[in-house]
Amino acid sequence: MDKFLYHRKLWEMKVRLLGETKVEKLRNSFVSRSRTSLWMIRAVTILLLWSCCVHLMALGEMWGPRLFKGWPSCFNQHELSTVAEMRSLPTKIALPPKRVYHNNGYLMVSCNGGLNQMRAAICDMVTVARYMNVTLVVPELDKTSFWNDPSEFKDIFDVDHFITSLRDEVRILKQLPPRIKKRVELGMYHEMPPISWSNMSYYQNQILPLVKKHKVLHLNKTDSRLANNGLPLEVQKLRCRVNFNALKFTPQIEELGRRVVKILREKGPFLVLHLRYEMDMLAFSGCSHGCNPEEEEELTRMRYAYPWWKEKVINSEVKRKEGLCPLTPEETALTLTALGIDRNVQLYIAAGEIYGGERRMKALTDAFPNVVRKETLLDSSDLDFCRNHSSQMAALDYLVAVESDIFVPTNDGNMARVVEGHRRFLGFKKTIQLNRKFLVKLIDEYNQGLLTWDVFSSMVKAFHSTRMGSPKRRLVIPNKPKEEDYFYANPQECLQLLDEPLRVI
Image 1: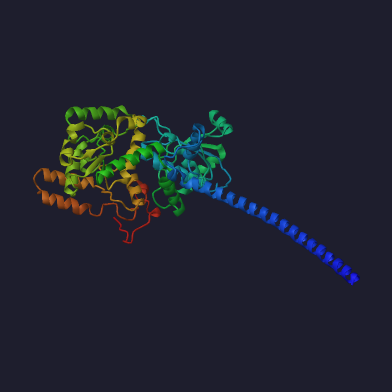
Image 2: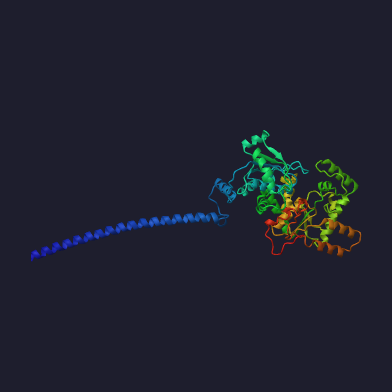
């Protein structure tokens, strides 16, 4: 019995010891697992917190200025200024890839004429450079014309945009590389004016060999050097791309133009009148209708003072009857009234100083009392940067003219034609193309009492009903390019035409 009890107690002790071991193992296992789980929980928590911080930072970039506007800042002044500088940096725009080609040489260009004459010339010269595979130097603008404007290309156009926006077509440099510049300084280049109204074969067969021979070619006259018609479609489209995309005015001019348009829009519709009744135009064309003898003499003296104005003896009345004179302010007032233009419309004058001043403008301001100019809409200080710079002033008028509800030029000049083409490009915006030869005949008959007002008005409306900037084919006259429709007034190859069929006029 004692032996039995002894073995039983021994067995119970073994069981107890064995149980304690398992419990200990179990306890140790539980502690180990608890520690592992704790570390895992901590790791996951840290990851979640880090992820939240990243998302909050991203949201802060997007919404911070809106959500926390007006809250006290924990940034110091230096940090705030750094943030402001970063926000003021321009947004990066994806640039087209550079066009890779064998460079045949360098093309220097000196433009001549006023702003819009030079604008069209720049478009032509970029196109010529592209198809000759040469490097173009940023064009030099005319500083010796009647306007005597010292503005450089960069003072009028956004030069960096001009270069980068065309980099997939042609390489454009702000100045010649030092080695090539040295050649020019030593006179090792060729200079010439190209032939007007030429096609691309002229540049490929006659101009390109000169570039390859001399390495640098300087074209010193560039207006109307490409034909209106008969050019490949890709050539015409590149001319449009330069005109409507690459040639942006400087940000300062663009901003001022937007401000003028905003001021006008807030007061209702507006008509831009390109009243080309300025002293230089009258002297150059010999048009003195309505001027007194002293003014006629002054205009004649001015015409003889400029030797490059070749026509000296001019019969003003003959020119007027042929439709070669700009309409006078009095003729313009009658025409706009006959066309049914609301007398209360804002009439923005896109022009320089009108010859004869308020005396000659009286008929127009009596008929349309809301006559305004950039000088009356803006503070004098707003125009300080472009004062005495006629091309910059013309650039401002150009922007307003393009945006107007109606555009009416009183003379068929470069601005009238280029603005007309730009307005066509923007959706055939209303541009009234006045026929001066028809109008002066009709106005004279009305003033002589040969026509009643109702007949006069109905005839003016009927004649101009198809001259409102609507779609039409460009007029082609073989061997008479000057008499054709100007490419930049109707760049039909680049226009998104309306459903209505094109008319040949």
